[in-house]
Image 1 (cartoon, rainbow, N blue to C red):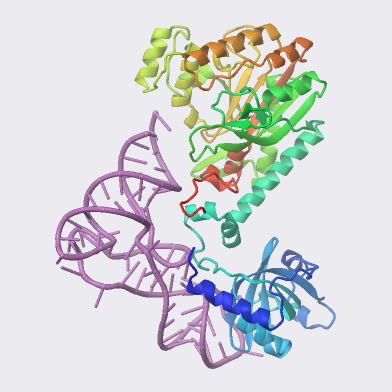
Image 2 (image 1 turned 120 degrees about the vertical axis):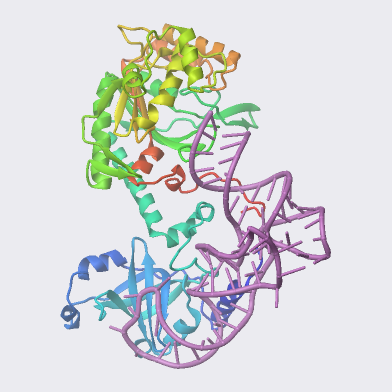
Length: 497
RNA sequence: GGGCCAUUAGCUCAGUUCGGUAGAGCAGCUGACUCUUAAUCAGUUGGUCCAAGGUUCGAAUCCUUGAUGGCCCA
């Protein structure tokens, strides 16, 4: 980028600072407090409190100057530090010669350390009366406009650091996301789950239906895939005796980008031995209602123009009843391929030819029901064909003991009682291979080692995956997944940044 | 993949209808000012109008292609 006047002006100041013998980038200032602590101690105190000798102590803060209001011989500023903002008051009377240095060479955007005692201004704002200060980092670029901030979404995503500096709601959103993940960890830790890490690079595609990213290991001269799900490794751990495990980490899917899809996204997957999918419904209700309470302050929350109620228990519907009652789709015989294909056609669903009844039914469900499920709703009885790793229902072998949880018209979680019959599992893998040969790019590979693990014996187990980003969107009222991912994927600009 | 929209100063935006010297606010710079908080007042600097090509005496503006982003659909 070309040097502009604004950068030049700041560099001139930088040079003046250096030539006066001051290091513009020192690292020997240690703040002893944060603005939020000063507010906690003095926020509710009256003016008179500050006038009494000995009532207030001296504090040492560091942060970025966000605004300056200069009156010649005194100056107000706002300092933004780790979790808040506080006004600073600089006076020539107090600072003497150093005041000139401040007025001449310190700008909005600079990072400084300050020492001073709090007081309240005429307007009642808690303010630090600065008795000494030190420049800690000279900023060379101007911050975005103080009133409108940075609103250009592209710039906000590309320069998230700037977005975080100037848009306090953005910072708040990510703090909520971080807290949410912490609460999820605590929830599972307290239930005796072990947090584990499994490979991100797989030599087989499995654990979900999605197109993978391909990469290559040079020394082994071997193609690898970024994982689309950790499922098969986590269940291997259950075979190994880790009866309760979870992993919170990234999955990678080589598909389109939208307000609901980022190529890399964060999931929690967890597995519990001696539990079935119904146990996981209870656990999911407990988890999500707790999160609503902790993050949003209540079970009923607003998301965009929707009201969502997380009060347990959540609604439960079978896929067939949801199709009938919500989608208004009457399917008489779920095995009648002809009428299913006609139904799909009338809904403008494009079939590629390899789909069986189960896939078509699921497509019809996604088209007619999904976006109408606003309050948390468990949909059960998914077809076997779209559930290659789920346990068959004992009464109806065409469906599985599985649910997906929908909130705000989106799939948030997917869970099932695990298929632990190695013979059935092998047959399902073989069916996947057939689909792959017929052109299903999302079909997985046969994982013979996983079948071998099942042959040693996977205890009866239930497992679930929950999309962390989508959950964060709902709990932070964010319209796009990019608003809850710090650095969403963007194409690079020609300039390289 | 398709449709619509956007891209102008560091930032937020006018200007495009109907082609005729590139505009404002904030930020910056110079000066004034010791309780302001979008501080105020006076003056002032700053432009690859996303890129390339075309039409034209003349293009930020019209046309074509491309880039990036947004929204919607698939």
